[in-house]
Amino acid sequence: MTFADVENFNRKNGATVVYDKTTVSTYSFAGTSWIGYDDPRYVSAKIGFAKAQHLGGYFFWAISGDNEWKVSSLASKAWDG
Image (cartoon, rainbow, N blue to C red; front, side, top):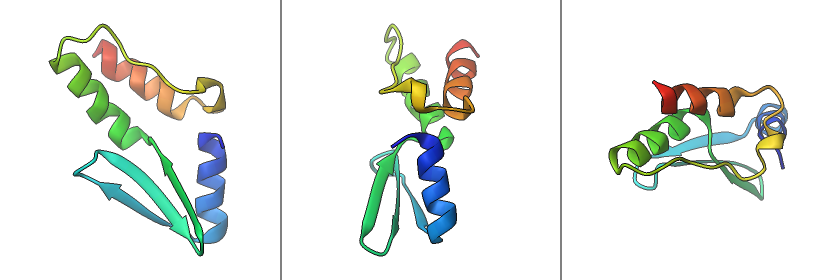
């Protein structure tokens, strides 16, 4: 499922989106469906953590699914900024 698919699912199903500060993750649910994913809000936080730990970079699983470059462009700016 791509990030665009997640956004469409959330919109079409009136899904509840949860930002979990403890695990620094996002998930949404509607009915019996549950989806865990990284959204722009927490990608920036995770990149901030990676930079603070002096890690050499970050990666995305299946970046090709970020059709409109919403998450990946934000991640690039967060890493370079």
